[in-house]
Image (cartoon, rainbow, N blue to C red):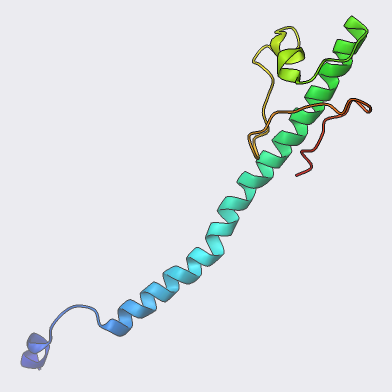
Length: 112
């Protein structure tokens, strides 16, 4: 009996390796979407908050100056540190700037 154990080679077989790769693949399929999903949701939520801030600050601009901010917003309200001390935010989803519809004075697009 000692001889038979001593004569065996140690290591893994091809079947062991295939099984391990399959298990890792199945776990990756379940875990990766759950890790990426919250990040996209957070970016969409941040865009929604940014839209609200831009619209609110634009209304304050109108109240203080009796005129709506001119387009592009970066050149008017975005340049005034009283309204956006850190500068006009950009969309975290696609990196674009926010702009107002001239008739409704609501942010155009960004319906992620």
